[in-house]
View 1 (cartoon, one colour):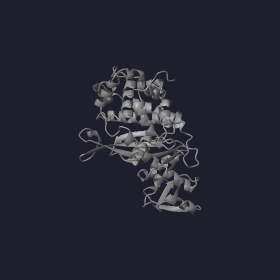
View 2 (cartoon, helix red, strand yellow):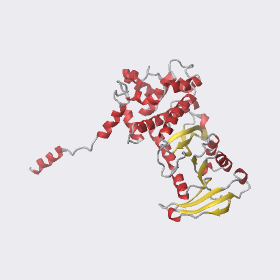
View 3 (spheres, one colour):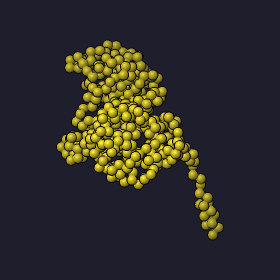
View 4 (cartoon, one colour):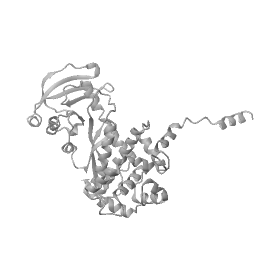
Length: 393
């Protein structure tokens, strides 16, 4: 219920205090800094993400300026930047990762019925990584090459709702394909990734988990055809074959049969070759599934543009991981708000409206109702009057 609470406080209703306290107790999070609780730190960093604050000084100044509004939004104090910096450096980042996992589980369940453009009941995930460049003098632990530093954000994205379900933060020198070693594959689910993840021994582990993968073949892919299916050329399918590996280096890693699909994009005539272990889905649907992989590229672009994950509040690996996980939590909170409130707005619009109404004491639905009720601006009557005036001169 509203009962005089701020929009920020209502947004945090999705964060269960019981579940959050379990995450804190799991890692004894409140012992090092009793003056700044984990929940208080989480609220402060979420506020910084929603308001686009890029430094601890900005966060401290804005929180102090809000004065009594902080209490009605769940804050118990305006955190000093030194206290917040120490907490970011020393408090276990896994507390915020586990809290984000609880929110992600809610979002995945809510978006389970979303359409994909393909008649599938199973879950569909896209896997990829994105590089975030940093200053080498500040983060020497993330050294990439001479004079450069970067971290890599490995992500598994549920394509129903575009919810990040698995996130791994590593130095940029870590190869993309190693991310497959950390993923627990869900039986029956589809996993879509580009050629950077083409490692046949790892693909066979997906196959043994009774899950499906869709990826692209390299140009030097060596295979032996067993038989061909009828290809629907009107849908852009050039060939649909069952093949086995014909390379003595890779064949031991994947001894079973694969499905090779040749496809021509109708928009530009580009030729693509897909590999999958699913033998039953129509070839055109396999191509559509791979095309939906582009959603993870849009996800990376979105969070880099609209959340603070390119400039960090701390320089240690722990502080960077805390900030990334809080940013993901804010993204999922916005997705939960969109779904539960049946809002037609984009996530970008939701974040913009939240940023200017966070500390307003009104129902959260009312903040978005004002935006929907806005009509096209009426023509300026004064302009016509001036035209008539000058016409009479």
